[in-house]
Length: 384
Image 1: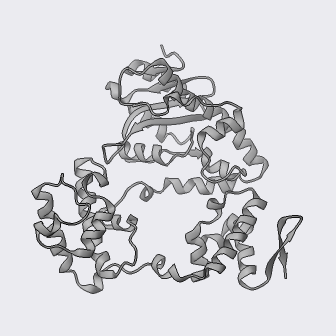
Image 2 (image 1 turned 120 degrees about the horizontal axis):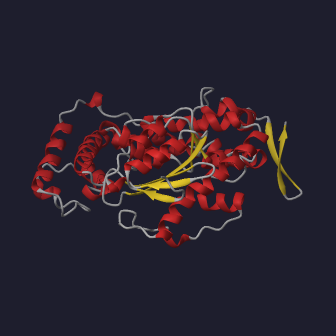
Image 3 (image 1 turned 180 degrees about the horizontal axis):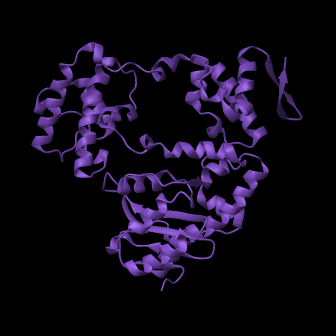
């Protein structure tokens, strides 16, 4: 029979646990994983708590995990996470599906005046007045057996989280921001957030003063690396680091001895790796220039007037303080550059709740109908 606050390593106990879980309306879920040496994260524990019970399921024990996947797919049970993206990525990789009906307390916290990307520890302290013991924070979760202290630490993540959910969701209701939280949480259900397609992998690599020809080589090199890392289940930088890929794309060496001399090239590459890189470069060279990647707006917006950008940032800070919403939730630096580069009514800040708390004031500022003054040592907004 299932005992609360334990580790589950056999199918019968998991079945008992599943039968308790499906009677709940809300479950708190967390995972422990390791991805230091792999492309895909290695799932080590799944912790789940209902209102009055909790347990950790050990996927390394050989247990049949289908009951857990069934829980995640059950739309009638709300699954509460904190900073859900990594957990969702793991479940998507293992099941091919994103959990149904989710709630992210980190997103909710950003609507409550608690700042950007609020850490779990801060949330526990704020809502439960509990300080988390960090002694087991850097546990190697792949090791077995786990100690009682390690299990208690892991399971406390969800026993605290289920309590926080009821408190923070009530606060969100009082602020009448339920629909806002729901809309932002829905972004987490987009599979493209978690899956890097080889042909678009280059877009995640930072490169200064890029030209279209260099980007063409980088696109193919990054695609090759992505495919190989997935195949070998190793981290990208374990094969070739981003900056080294950029160097190769710029220098375009077509001979192995020249390739080996490039700064940052790994000594762990095999002869087959070197040959594949050379062949990739030769393939890129044959590509017609009208098929090269376009220079995106990120590069075009580098010459945005800094004073104008700072004025928008001041308005963002003001609106954030007044609304109690985290700045990054409202808009980021790229959004502000977009606004200055090419104001567009279809931009997200001119839609929905963002329009109400920020977009309307941006429009006034751009039209010269808004100014700032200092009153009682605080910034005050003035309509002209």
